[in-house]
Length: 135
Image 1: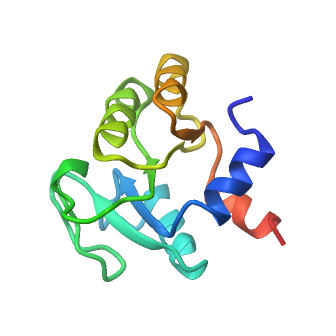
Image 2 (image 1 turned 45 degrees about the vertical axis):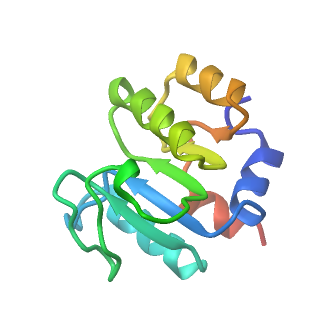
């Protein structure tokens, strides 16, 4: 349900190529760093979202989703499940088309609210795993 193959494919191939990566920093040991690199290799523009607003993989960072001065298509969330719902709400507020909660990030109430707001959503999946499987 939370990783419906049709929704996964739609987000990865149809919804636009600007991905905000919430929780992305310059820490190369964190999963967000590696996944953001994979997204770039597949033609996605990444937008680091982190309180430090660091530049990562050559892309300027922002302290919050609301601080980004251009349209975000997909919000990819690398936060603790307890914090992820707030990121999903911000994604709705900025007019994103989809929210992607990474492996291990699960918030069923946030999923329901985000879907009810009209956004596509995937939870507990990783685009760096899903993209190569698209063929």
